[in-house]
Image (cartoon, rainbow, N blue to C red):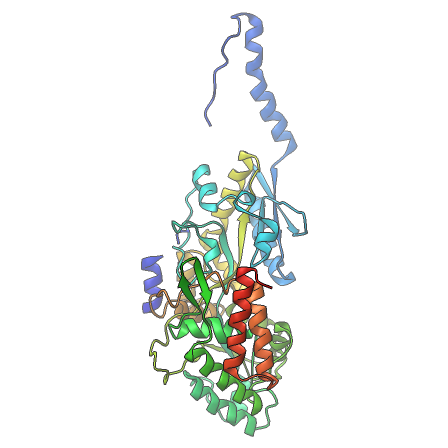
Length: 442
């Protein structure tokens, strides 16, 4: 509970007037313009609530959860109606839930979006979120730490276990491994018992490099005069990837071409353990015909750095507000954001989407015995994110926030699994490729 208490203390961030007509003669005709506002008001009332469009790229289950939220808002709002649509190229809805490179695709440059903190302030609506932590992706805050968008779809990697499979091979599902060496012993027992896929991983680069580094307080980027340069080929990263390579050769680790395939194998009961986003909890529980266990990522207790467990990182999509819309529509956006952050709506979103809490109500819900085990993933995720106060080395960086960087890491890791490259050569090559990408060198 201490880490959660620190979240509550520090925050995760918190989250017209009439004009007079002049220059008209004082005649009976001068009074006629006064009737216009009433006529306009009647016309607006007849037209019904003003539509506010929300585009998204969510999967069907999460889109359904979002539609429930939108429906509840529309039932209570007499002035605005949120219309949920799938986001398409060239589309400019009032709000859009995007992540990664799609941010530049739909909101190119600062003129493409209006900062959320500004939208809420101009509308006079409090932004009741938690303080953006250093563990959150950097693209969501400005230089003053103010929210640019609402981080509605964040998660962090955790470990999932097939509790039934653990029991079958004589393992205690309530005594889960804390270190990577402990996990190796567990995987060995699973292999001996006939498991064809003891361990797999979704988003290998994200788990094995970015978050394993932060979890051990080791940097993935180094500061330089003009920003940052990639630096994820240090001793910790090489040690961990070399260990994973030995697991792959021993058939302790199985890898798949697509993240969805790895998660599908676990949900089908074919893999006993998986490292995957905390948000996958809802899908695993919905699809699996076995009891799903969840635990923090393991750590290396023999690494000389001695920082583990430090903290992991929060990544994912956010709801951005388009620039250039009428002022009256921004008021509708502000009202919808405030509605989303209400306690009952925040809890419902956590339970149905699996994403991390946006405010104190969400954090409190994760501690509730009444909602357990629905929010076990949130409890584990928040505990990981706040295990220790984030440092400069364990904070999110803009480098690993790019999908192309993650693609390069995953490509080089595949060369390791195929025994084409040793761990250090693969990571050295990845650093060179990322630097070329960052500087525009072909």
